[in-house]
Amino acid sequence: QVQLVESGGGSVQAGGSLTLSCVASIPGYNDYCLGWFRQAPEKEREGVAVIGRDRSTSYADSVKGRFTISRDNAKNTLYLKMDTLKPEDTAMYYCAARSEYSCPRNGAYFQYWGQGNQVTVSS
Image (cartoon, rainbow, N blue to C red; front, side):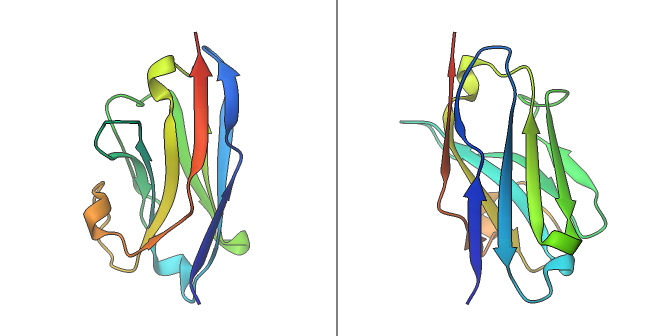
């Protein structure tokens, strides 16, 4: 049974940092495209960052230079380090996995999802 379990969310003041983690139980984890997505109330889901099996990455323009996605295949764990957080980063954050080689920053192409983790940034 595929399972993605997230941790690390919470509340922080603007300018602060948080790191999200996502532990996955997926056979063949190393070959998966992995990603972080977020959704704020009354807004569409946004692809924050993705990382391919070759560790290539892609970021939303809104987080470039502030967020860093990484993966530790030995631990089946995906990370999102978030620095210089802004109030507009407030959202529910989800990790996701896709079994194909290509790694689009589009949640419609991801098969497996975590339960979501709230991040709240106050001004």
